[in-house]
Image 1 (cartoon, rainbow, N blue to C red):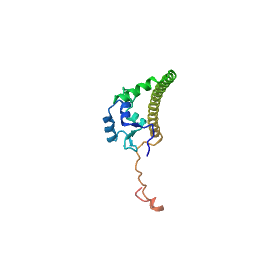
Image 2: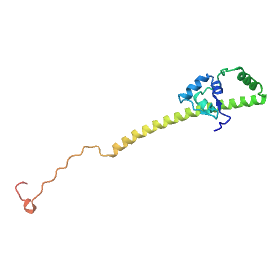
Image 3: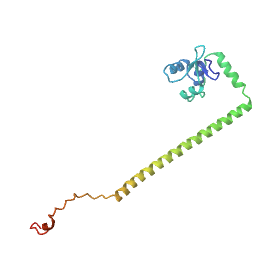
Image 4: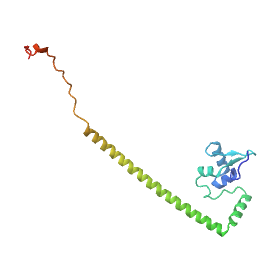
Length: 160
């Protein structure tokens, strides 16, 4: 049942989320964070799942678990080339622009929905008024049946 390389160990997930390892373990046991066990019976967490539960993951300072992890983090930060730093800066700018556009679009759609609801309410009221105008709103009188006449001779009877 090999786990893909892009899954995080519980320790790395905790470091990335900026929380303690025990917090990650509690979230998994509570069912709030999905994880799966690998061949060695160790928890493996999908980074997307971690981001779902911890939206600010990666923005906090990582929790230092040991010196080796800290040295590895420092080495990876120093190995970034100026070109990769420029690409990262460009990507961050693009993400910020997309998020800003997304917020604007959501606001526009919310305003449009509100406008359409108002129009629908006005049209419904107008429809009720028109329906009332088109239908006979007077009270219906009970029709009284005409008395039967007794044929030709009934015309000359005294009851008339």
